Amino acid sequence: MKDYITERTKTNNLTLLTDLYQLTMMNGYLKAGMSERRAVFDMFYRGSGGYCYAIAAGLEQAIDYILNLHFDESDISYLRSLGIFDEAFLDALKKFEFTGDIKAVPEGTMIFPYEPILTVSAPLWQAQLVETALLTFINHQTLIATKAARLRECTKNKISEFGLRRAQGADAGIYGARAAYIGGCRTTSNVVAGKLFGIPVTGTHSHSWVMSFDSELEAFETYAEMYPDNCLLLVDTYDTLKSGVPNAIKVFDKLKAAGHKPIGIRLDSGDLAYLSRKARAMLDAAGHKDCLIFATNDLDEDILLSLHSQDAKIDVYGIGTKLITSYKNASLGGVYKLCALEENGVLIPKIKVSNSHEKTTNPGVKKVVRIYKEGMAQADLICLDDENIDASKPLTIFHPELTYKRTTFTDFEVKELMVPIFKDGKLVYQMPTLKEIAEHEDASISEFFSEYRRVVNTQDYKVDLSDKLWALKQELLRASQK
Image (cartoon, rainbow, N blue to C red; front, top):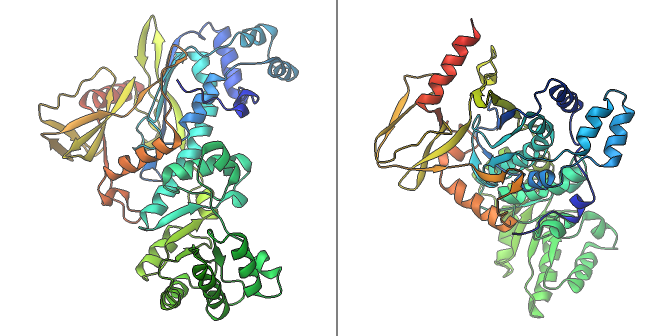
């Protein structure tokens, strides 16, 4: 099995990557004699105000965290300095190890609100500790992978991740690049992400390169001399159409005559639709039909859709700020909620009740099955873990709130989404390579009709509860009112 604990995580103990109240609750569970009671927690994201679908990401970093989970002497010393924990608790932390089970949706899988992305089943104080870190890893990377997938959905052309300088810190830039690769940006400008994850790196020169020479043409010629087989020129430093593109063509003519193939030009300002059409015509007329046009400049879904509608002649989009920061949607909104707790050796379903229906949880130990017909995803069904779906018989599902809305499937197939990751604290999952994860994302998203993937007027995909789970939820809701 691949040993994917990086040198970084070997030397960087992240056990204290948690909120203080996780530790105070752990102490309380220990003192109340509850710490070893089996508990089951689900991680899922809510759909209100956020993305109507998401691309699961961040599992590899979550696995690294679990594998490296321990309290070292410096952790114990720091917690002692807070003056709120006694020595009995600190001694217990010295012996702490994760012995539970984890199931999760593989990275790159298309997922939907309220269905479990990851489930932890472990002694209560263990399951409580890991909440914050698991949410940190999976919330962030799933958010960025989803943003990348949405951007890709807006164009048939390639997109590249250029966000490092605009990320909210180094880790956000590094792991954001990884997540963006999963979501559809199959190249990055981020060199350390290229080294760590094997993502192909790409880039050209900046405006300062052009401004450092006496003329734009000299800047282009010097760059071409150094990189004759990787020549991509930024043409908007002074005037895109009057000097930038004509000077690029002069350089490309020389490269071509010398047996080299220029890559193309990059636009970074102005009316990208108009400039790209004009530049395309100029390049074609000069015999450079194979030269690509790259575009950057604070691109997002709205701009990509607009450029597409204007017949922009852009081959590759470099997307930075609004990808790496998930502009307009700052958080996935993933949560981690208790759904079952052991009492007298039996797991008892638990429910959180709220006046807001989106904050009322689904109780019990669960699984998610995806319903397929003729190879295309039709609906997801959240079931209790002990349920079996008989695909040889008709299956009727219904909307969890609008129960009159029903659909019956025949001649269908089902696939369970979550897979075992840890069993009794031991890793049982073979982690795929990042390239394999990206290929899985391509396959997963292709299983959905375009109306479920589009970013404007997205059609609601069916995510329903099984009859048994729905009845259990109603029973617990009624009991909570007594």
